Amino acid sequence: MAARRLGRARLGAVAIVTLSAAKGRMLNFDWFAAHRDFGAFFIRLAVGVRLIYGTADNVFSRERMTEFEQFLSAHGTPLASVGAPLSVYLQFVCGILFILGLGTRPAGALIAVNFVAALLIAHRTTGFLDTWPALMMLAAGLFFLFNGAGRPSIDAWRAGDPAT
Image (cartoon, rainbow, N blue to C red):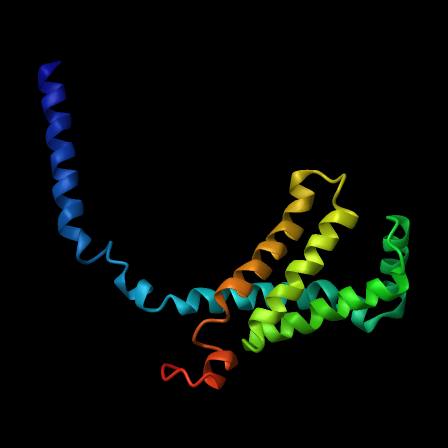
């Protein structure tokens, strides 16, 4: 029994030494820290594509837009015939802006407001998993509002960021 414990202790010590030796090679995240702006870039791409994909059918089909207007009306939204196209085109255009990294902070603010409205209008009675996509879009809007686009963006280029 004592020999077994001693063997485990040796294995643990070997693992710690191995991890310590590998720290300089495998567990070094300095490169990622130096390129952190690409994190915002990847989020911009994912959120932008999702916003465009999720609204393209409404943008390019009058029938789909009418369905969305009826959905909003059924949920008690006043002026659904104005609110539906406003929400759809806002999401579509903001998706493009996020991908380009253009006007990212104002677009983030608009998306945050849009998805607060979506949560209040359409997700009051839905379960957590059905609400999750709208919560993630709200979080993304707030992320862009607070953090901006990052370096690989038109916003950074227009601001004269020498790294772009």
